[in-house]
Length: 615
Image 1 (cartoon, rainbow, N blue to C red):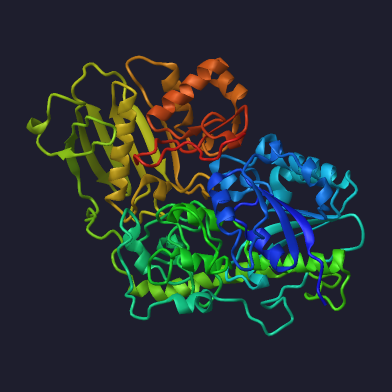
Image 2 (spheres, helix red, strand yellow; image 1 turned 180 degrees about the vertical axis):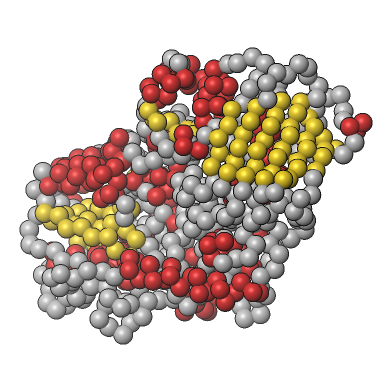
């Protein structure tokens, strides 16, 4: 029996992943609203694709807040689908500086969604977003969203689902909210895996892309960069944590939870992979089991896009579109369930509904997978090779003496003869000695006299990650603020040369995931004090870093006006302290500040402003 196609409006359409699933389920997408031009180019490129958009689908490349829905009143729009950008509620948002939810303009995009519902009064809407939305900011944004939709006469049903349970070869958790005026809606049972009640296993990476593989392709080891040589050593299914003491690695390279879980993540080809990221870094997985990035063709399969679906743009832009999409396969199951239950009341349903009391086990299964990682690592560890390649570690008790003559912040060339120092640039002497389990670093400016009192910094808690050492203590005589950066570079060098760690952050731990094993405290002293020096000293203590502080409170503590505080934040960032405000990371909202580390970021690539912009 032929079915009537359900007239639908797509909001926040992205590259069309959600739309494709609804089209395949018999929905007629009359128009798409998407602000990003490159995504709109992809939508337009697929207007004539088999199984895709109809050629007459309207593509509105504009801000949904400015979209005029009134011309669509007479087209019988029965369904509205789409989910606003999720940075304000996502884990990525938390990493960037905190979840502010509806305090951010992007968090208020649901109000534009509601306005369009008011204009078109559809029978049903489907709203998707990140799984963390209900818990963000104590649930306040979620309650606001639910109240706004309920006020318009919709009954609501919401669930967090894992795409892998619906035939997607990727673990990808999404919040799905269905609003309807009449009838009843129950979420579909998983179609694959142990919760499905069928013999359909979860779909693996290997079976999804097997026909795209070249059996003669060699295993690669050419990722390059600081961590690239480590990828070949990572067992399938594991990530950077393989190189931690907690996972039993005899020569750790990273502190526990010092990185996010996708760093060096290599898929287990026999299982679904983890979530594909829209804007990964060079060392961000998922990586192919042959130690390379996946191709776009492979990534489209893992996200269940049709092979012939065109993604317009460079590799990075295509990857971004894939990573920001809802998997069409997941969208199709949800769309078919919406159609059968709310528009056609078909029996039997294409997809069985969840019985009363059903509880998904995907989180429990996730924990079980994590528990197996230790076993996998234990089997692989005896085969490991020295992690730092050409790096030669110092023997215990070995002393070092050298000179620095930097002309820039990142000039760290050593000189072992004082006579080799040039007239240009600052001049420092460095002496690193050991006594028992303690490292002592003496750092002294040579070209300026007198300097005054000694600065001191102590790092404790090193034993877990640097066997044989408990503490490092710096004693420094410096003359100006940039000297602080150079002193920290010497500290990093002293620690990394006594271990297989690469950076100070690898030892200290990422600010958002730290277990507080390593602790830093200290005070810098210069011939003349300043407000900037007071701010740096305030944050040269672990307990004051990694958490938000109200700018008004910080201003009072440092005895600064709001305007002066803004200037101090800028000055700290100039010497690479990662201190963040709404000016550098709009996602954190007004009147809040966070200094992530008690030391400056020592890599020239590390300090950035947030890509997430409001408005």
